[in-house]
Image (cartoon, rainbow, N blue to C red; front, top):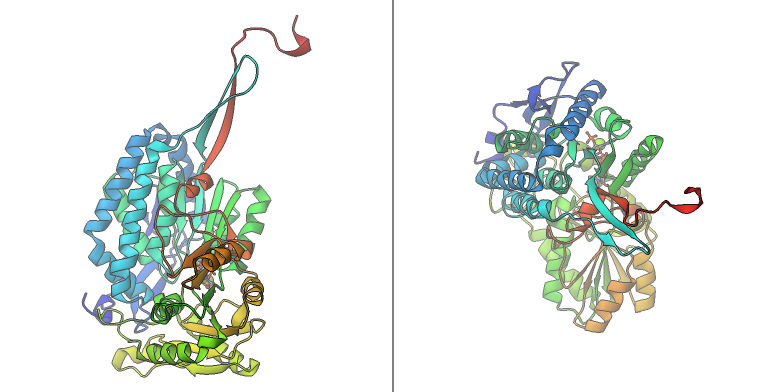
Length: 501
Ligand code: NAP
Ligand code: MG
C-alpha cells in the first residue's frame, strides 16, 4: 500500500471477535468505514449491537472465571510481550491501515502510534508479575494483609483519534492485572483494533479474554456501558458521552474511568525561546489534525511577544504540507470524517461572529484528484480571541488554535483555569521558578514545560475537572484495573469479644 487510494482499492471485510472466534453480527448487519482522504470504502465491518455485546460479555465472564484466572502472572506477562512483538513485526502494515482508516499522516502512524502501542504492551507485560498486596501493621495478635485482585470483566470504549494506541492504553493494563475485556472501537476507525484481534489469537491468549465488538456508540457502546455483567467500564471520548457512560454505569454501580475532552492552555511567556515555542504551538495544535484531547488549543501569548510570535506562527502554519496521508512528506492529512469537518467549519463562522480574526486557514485546501473528496482542512489560527468566547471554551477537535493575549501572571493563571476542562497545559519560559509555580497553579492532569504532547507508557495521563477521572499508563493505570481485598487472620487462638464462652 503506497498511496491512500491503493489502501482502499478492494474493501476489506471484518467480523466480530467473540470468544476466540470470528463471527458475523447476530443481526447480520454490517457498516462501512471510509478512507477519509478520498471517501472511498476501506472496509466492510460486522455491526455489533446488544445481542452481540451480551455474547461477548458472557464469553469474557467465562474466560475470567476459567482459564485466565488460573494462568500465572508470568504467563500473562509473556502473552502481552509476545503480542508486543507480533505488533512490532507487523507495524508497517498496521501503520498503513491506521492511516487509511483515520487519515493521520503515515509518518505519525509509523513513528508515534505504532511504537507507542508496542511500548504500552511491553511496559504492562513487565507489570504482570509485580502487582502485589501489602502486610499492614495492625495492633494485637492479628495478621492483616491485602490481595490486589483484578476487577473482572471490563468494557472498554475507545475513540477514533488514535485507534490502535487507545486500544493499547486500555487493553495492556487490564490484561496485565488479570481482567478480561470487551472492547468497542469507534465506528469511524475499527480496522486496526480488529487486526489486533488476529494478533491476540496468534499470540495464544485463551478464548474470550479479549472480545472486540465494532458497532455504533448508541447501540453497541450504550449496551456495553449499561451491561449488568461487566464490573468496570473504561471510556475515552467526548465529555458529553462520558456523562452518558457515567449515568448508565450508575444503574449497576459499575466502576468507571473516563478520559474526556480538553481545551489546554499553551502559554508563551516573553522570556521563552520563541523558536521552540512556535514549534511547540505547531505540535500542540496541528499534530494529528488537531484531533487530540490534550491539544494546545488555547494559545496564551504575552502581549510583548504577540506580534513577533504570530508572524512566525502564521508563516509556519501556512507552510504545513496538507495532503495525501500516505506520502511520507505530508504533515497533515484529512480530518477523520465529514461530520468532524462540518463541525470544525462551523467554528470558523462562530469565531467571526464572536469578533475573532481568522489569521490563517479557516477553509478547505485545494487538492487534486481523489483527494478533492477527502475531509481536509487547513491549519487555522484565530487571533483576537477572548477566553470567554465559544472558540476558547468548546473543544473544536481540529487544527484550530485560538490565540489569547495576557499582561500579568495572576490574570493569566485565572484565565488558563477558567474552563470546564483540565487535561493538560503547556508552559514556555526560561524562568525556572515561574515554570514550576505555573505547573502547580494549573488545574490539569498533565503539564509540559518547554515541550508539548510528551507521553510515555510509564507516565500517568488523565484529567482534572470535566476531563475525566482515573489515570491511564504508568503504575496508576493498574489502580483502575485492580481492587484491594483486606484479609484478617487471628494469631492468638482466643475467642473474640464478649461472645466468647
Ligand atoms: P464520542 O461520541 O465521544 O465517541 C467516543 C466513543 O464513544 C466511540 O467509540 C463512540 O462510538 C462511543 N459512543 C458514542 N455514544 C455512545 C453512547 N451513548 N454510549 C456508549 N458509547 C458511545 O466522540 P465523537 O462523536 O466521535 O466525537 C465528538 C467529539 O468528541 C469530538 O469533536 C471531540 O470533541 C470529542 N472527542 C474526544 C476524544 C478524546 O480523546 N478525548 C476523542 C474523540 C472525540 P461511535 O464512534 O461508534 O459512535
Ligand atoms: Mg460518535
